[in-house]
Amino acid sequence: MNFQKICILGLGYIGLPTASLFARHGLKVVGVDTNLRIIETLRSGNLHIHEPGLQAVFKSALESGKLTVSSQPEESDAFYIAVPTPFHEDVYGEYDGRKYKLADMSAVTSATEAILPYLRKGNLVVLESTSPPRTTVNLVAPILERSGLKAGSDFFLCYSPERVLPGQILRELIENARIVGGISPESAAAGRDLYTTFVKGEILETDATTAEMVKLMENTTRDVNIAIANEFSRLAEKFGVDVWEAINLANRHPRINILNPGPGVGGHCISVDPWFLVEAAPELTPLIYQARQVNDAQPHFVLEKVRQALGSLKEKKIAAFGLTYKPDVDDLRESPATEVVHLLQQGGAQVKVWEPFKPDAEMQGIDMACTLDEAILEADALLLLVRHTEFLDLNPQELTGKTSARIAIDMVNGWDAKKWQKAGFQFARLGATKP
Ligand code: SAJ
Image (cartoon, rainbow, N blue to C red; front, side, top):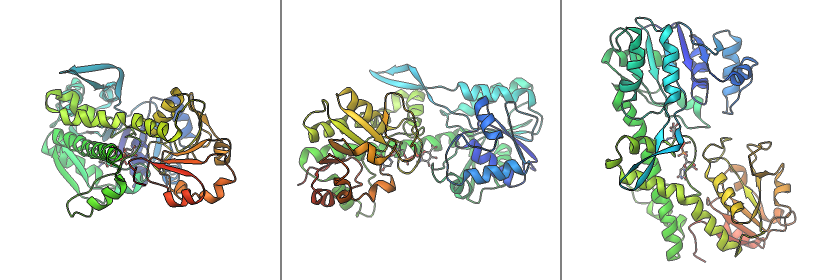
């Protein structure tokens, strides 16, 4: 199939880079978003998100005239949906005493309905938003078929999951293997034709529901693997073992690869997607449910570790290093570091946060420092919450003169205990009680 024009609904972390890449490869692209502020920002050539390399690719796509930004879809050869699928904040399901979160599919529904007036025979529609199994078949197809056209024969319909890592999105969009699940084999073939425009990785065709499962299985596997690492950190504390040393040694086994414990699992994917499987089949997912519970509880475990190191939290001044959901990104969504800070505050501590990726962020209820020096000046303890590269290089000797703190607490194995102790700090690390 030959594509001249594509409409991309949802200009976030996935939709915007994808739109820019299609445009750079010669397609006429209409980027659609319902948020007028985002449209204004993009039209002026600026970005509302931070992703390395994106500004340049987006700008050149915009300036070439190949990419336009609009609040409405237009008639196109293909439509591509990349809107958020969060979970409901205040509605839960329950099975056998297990309370689980429910996917909010309203953005997918609205985006699909927005396409409806423009859908024509021979078009391709691709859903890329992470979705519960059977969403393409049971939710998207019936909406589009209100047009009178039949999915799979009159128009093509695919589910194709994004699998890119924030911070590396542009490279991974091009290089990663791409799964294209069609509602019919012809749909998968059409999807392949579309992605061939810029994808250099392997393109693998399957059916739509398998592709949905693949995405959820990937992120759920990671969540469960991080949960076991977090549980190991708790066991290590109990038995006086250094979990980092133990993981290192275990990983010398040729078939073992234990991930890193830390303050918990954040972001908009790994802490969200496993719930889609739990919701779809709560009776079949006790392990997935439990992993979510372990990871969600990890900030509380971290809190106890800090309380232990400080004796008590009351009136203690803590300088927290990092607030984003993982290292070297500026994304604060579902960040466990943020939760740790809130818990510390509730425990009576005064926390000042230094987040170099968001130096001017205003976070409700969180005291953000403008500089590292300001954060540490009057602190009792320095607390490392995110393994940003620039935090690893901090020299404790140089910091001693700039802070009243004499305690350093490391939740992510980013600091060398010996160096800090040599500089006069009492040092504590998550999952490590070995002297
Ligand atoms: N984390 C740990 N320990 C680890 C690894 C990660 O605690 O050993 C934490 C991170 O600090 C973070 C969270 O887990 O809070 C998630 O980070 P991540 O790097 O594992 O994943 P994401 O959410 O940035 O991106 C994931 C990726 N999926 C997989 O690796 C299976 C990415 O490929 C997906 O495209 C993305 O989810 C998505 O959009 O679904």
